[in-house]
Image (tube, rainbow, N blue to C red; front, side, top):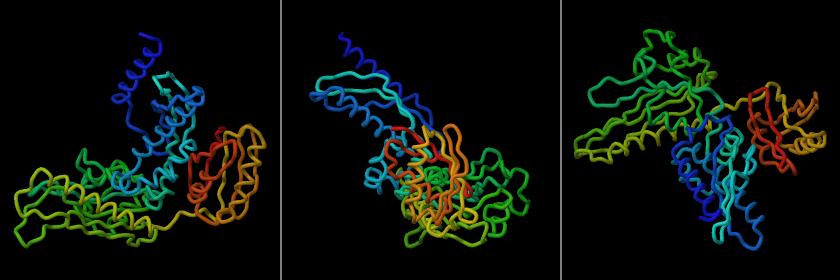
Length: 389
C-alpha cells in the first residue's frame, strides 16, 4: 500500500471514530473543538489547493456547530440566511485551528483539520441573522409549565417537589435549549415554593413571586398536553398548549399563545405522537417570537459600558480597533481609553444602543489583519478577544 493510500485510510478511520466519540457540545459562551475533513480539486498548485481545502474544513466546522445551536424548524426556514449571513464569514468564529494531516487522492487534496469554534460570537451572529431570539435570551427564564403526559394521570410539574422532574416538559425544553434560552434549574427553588403554589397551574402573582425568588427576568407559565386524544366527530380536543410569558420587572404579560393542535376522530396512528409534539413546539416558538418583539432590552447604566480587549499584539491593533469603534456613530456616542497593559486594554464606551447591539456590530466589522470575538456581555461590560489572521 502506498504512503498516500495509508494516510487516506488513517483519515477514514479517524472520521469514523468522530461519528461516535465527539461529546455533546457545551453551552454558548464556550469554545468547542472538532476534527473536520476538507477537500478541494488539486489543480496545478497543490499548496493552494491544500489551503482551499483547509478553508472549506473551517467552514464545515462552523456549520456543524451552528446547526447544533439552531432550532430545527428555524433552520429549515432560514438556510439562506445561515449561509449568506453567518457561514460566509466562518473564519471570524474560529479561534484556533491546526492541520493534522493532508493527502492527495486522485484529482483532490484532502486535509484533516482540528478546529476550535467560539460559540459565544457564533451565537451573536446567529442572533443577528434572525436564527436565534435575542430578547428572550437577555434574561434568565423560569419555566412553570405543567405537562399532561397521559390520559387520566395527574399533571407533572417540577415545582410540586417531585424528584427527578425536569425544568420543563421535554418538547418544550428542546425548543428552549435550541433557541438559547437560559433556564432556572429546579434546585434553585428547592424548599422555597409555598404550599399554595404546589399546583399545576399558577396565578400570575404566584408565578411572578417564584420568578423573583429565583432571580429570573422572564417567567413562562401554563400547561401542555403531549399525547394524542381521541375526540368525537364535530368536537375539538382540549388545547395542546396554553402558555403565557411575563416580564418580572414590569409584571406585564409579554405574550400569550393557545394552540388546539391536531384533532383525532379515529384511533390515532403512529404519526399522532410526533404531530402533537410538533404542535406543542410550534406553540412555544410562537410564544418566544412574541417575547423577542416585546421584551424590554437590557441597557447599560447611563448608556455606558466598560469594554475590555484582550489579545492585543501591539498599540497599532488598539489604535485600529479604536478607529473602527469611533466610526460606528449609530451605535457609539464616545470612546475613552482608560488603561492599557501587556496584551490588553480597557475602554469606556458611551452607547446609543444596548450592549448586545454593540457586540453584534463589532463582530461584523472589517479590522484588517485581525478578527474580534465577543467573549461575554453584561449590561455594564463587554469583553473581547482579538485574533490575528
